[in-house]
Image 1 (cartoon, one colour):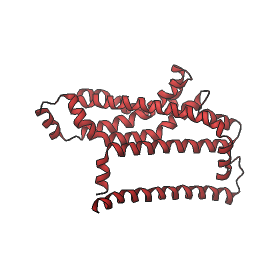
Image 2 (image 1 turned 90 degrees about the vertical axis):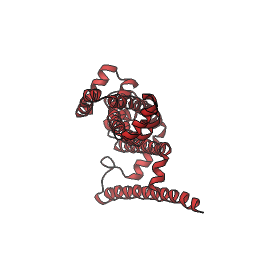
Image 3 (image 1 turned 180 degrees about the vertical axis):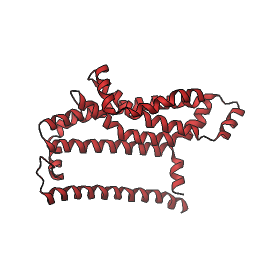
Image 4 (image 1 turned 45 degrees about the vertical axis):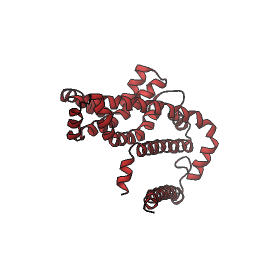
Length: 264
């Protein structure tokens, strides 16, 4: 009986959190509709939720290929940023010398505006998918690297010394200690990166390209189709939220001990 009670608690908690999220979305839609109705705004200035939904349905066939392109660029860039970020965090954790050498440039890279970096990447690598993937990787690289590195730093030195006493190699220490201990930090960095990743792809497409949500938004803006622009914005928001939730679910499966601790 105790086991059933414990298993039911997390389920009810997730259900309550889901309903709160739905309520939050409905409140935002009601606020949006209220602004349009009270101020009697024309559709070219601010379309209503119903008009935006109708545009989404009507342009579904047109939006599909653009969405697929943006999603592919986003996933490739996020995967590249994850592999490079964790690798760099391991290198910085290996010695104080490597940390002092690599950490300052890592921080300084975030002082450069994305709108300055993206055109340069497009000039160097062209208007194809590779440039968009690199822009996404640039946007996502920092939060993944920093969170992974900070996770390595907080590992208990006692456990490290114990593994060294038992004759564990560096690879064994990372496999059995560092990576499991820093998984929560890596997941937190991936959550931040997931929310930024779609933005990076869209910015790259906005500046140049033949397909993608950024291209769709540019064409909508040039033709003064505000309803299409808002429809694309909703798709971008939904895609970002979907990636965030996917990382959240994957992180919960990779770190089940955190869930048990939170619901204890």
